[in-house]
Length: 361
Ligand code: SAM
Ligand code: SF4
Image 1: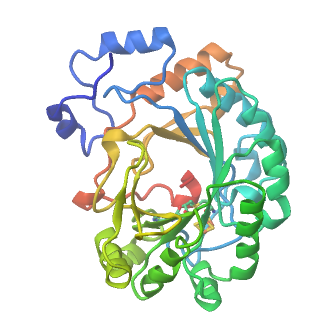
Image 2 (image 1 turned 120 degrees about the vertical axis):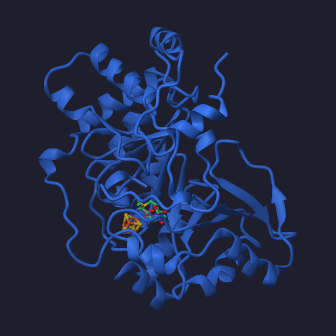
Image 3 (image 1 turned 135 degrees about the vertical axis):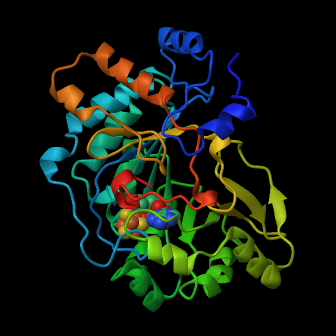
């Protein structure tokens, strides 16, 4: 049986790109032999977050800088065939959950066909998408018919002017239509992601949470992370989950805890009597690395081992060099094995190599 690494190994590895615990090699051979995506700490990876593009039709304050955003030339992004090949190989080594993200995944051409292709791989049990929902009104039905199971929608406020400000130009009415279309298409339970920022939307968390009173939705409050391009926004704007919870409890009274899946980064609560739930995602104040079960595939074909560490393994060039499936599987398994233990946000470390939209948040 695979167990988590002892605390001494964890401590040794925080802050290091790769740490190989003593005596890990036999376990690695075993994992390779079995073709299972397990890291050196015994964590089993079954969740792949796939960035379909680094581009977006919004410019959210906490995600992209106001100026100077550079996007990758299309030739550097995985083609549809390369993307499907990489995902199909991940399915062969135990990935069962996929999430499409970006940038904004709905602006990727052939999205419906990609969804259909990914959902058809044996072993894929759940396919979801994180989106700003601007275009969802037009395509929610087609995506559901192609096999998409659920969506998470990023929405930080219910005030149209504030929304425009926080997304640098976004239209709340269209986003809301997108959410309703997703709900009607059966892409639920709907989860809404709200990044809470000081002096921006911190006073509106109650309105967001109130959406759960009569809807079976999950409204999740995220702490801003200091990724490339938004370090200052983080430093000036971080509102911790504790502060958000205190604000909600001042309005609704004590929240009731709700049991959550161990691998879910959200800690769940409910306003007493509400139809839906409230989640707090607290990468800064309460990291959830120990239960991490995910890696990311960037739009340019790198297996990104941790959102907040620069470690990546190239798949695109390997595929373009004509590698066969076994060679790519070896690269995938070796990459997963080298997944860093965790990030150091709580210790003040920051990620300055890629921004959120370039990794696939
Ligand atoms: N464009 C899609 C969207 O906004 O839902 C998908 C990509 S976006 C990068 C994925 C998620 O990352 C969103 O929920 C967004 O709120 C979140 N996000 C972006 N920048 C963040 C940051 N600096 N800290 C925390 N969450 C962030
Ligand atoms: Fe675009 Fe999503 Fe980033 Fe906002 S959070 S700029 S919608 S990628």
